[in-house]
Image (tube, rainbow, N blue to C red; front, side, top):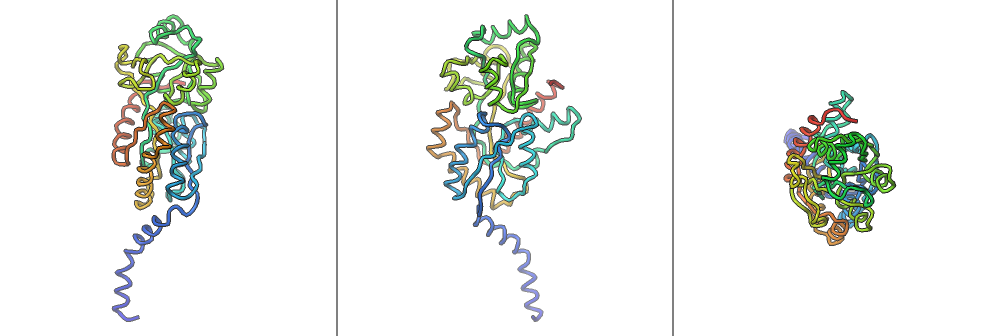
Length: 327
């Protein structure tokens, strides 16, 4: 090889990683994809993941397997597992707004931080529902004010279930309790599904959950919804007032669900996933599944979703600091 050949070979070397990454993206996915859901079946993240995974399978041409990996309270075990996975597009995460809250809770209790939000790359927001306060239909409380008045008479005696300490359900209820100046008894579970089961069985007396989780039980006459943590009323529960309407001005909480990958994911793979999710979120099957559940599609592509996560996370972290150490 003469000097000119050596120079040409050297000049081509910087192109190899880009060519390799582009070729990888063109071939992606070459095998099945795992979508971690850090909660048991039956909650908001699972409700979002299953129709999305089915639609992604059709678009990507490979199976997208939903892996319910609960534990650690509020989704920390599944979130951490996704953060540690190889950034190759074969392990995705469908998680909730508690993603940003849990590291802050670890720091609050001086525990090892399981993961950092900076380890994740937002791909697409799927849902963004307000949290609703629900009680059994047989409960004596007909309105949120009835609930508050009873709680003031019996501090610490009304129990509520959650998806785990500092998960979305827990923060929503503590936000409401703080604003209403009442004391409730927190009973944590491994996810919204088990917490809902506990409410239906009478193990706990209240829950804050997403509309899609509650609607089938409300339609069956088993639950009653007393209040909405969103800034405005929603179509699936038009008669339920917001807490802000009721005078609790600082109560605003949403259970958003979004798809994430690892922050080191190659840009061509991220683009492929973003393009696929844009198709998923216009799929008639997905739209119908969410409409049936009572949740409205709240799709955002990566740039808008990243900005939304930053703003919402700052608000939730401030709420956790205000709540302080609670069990």
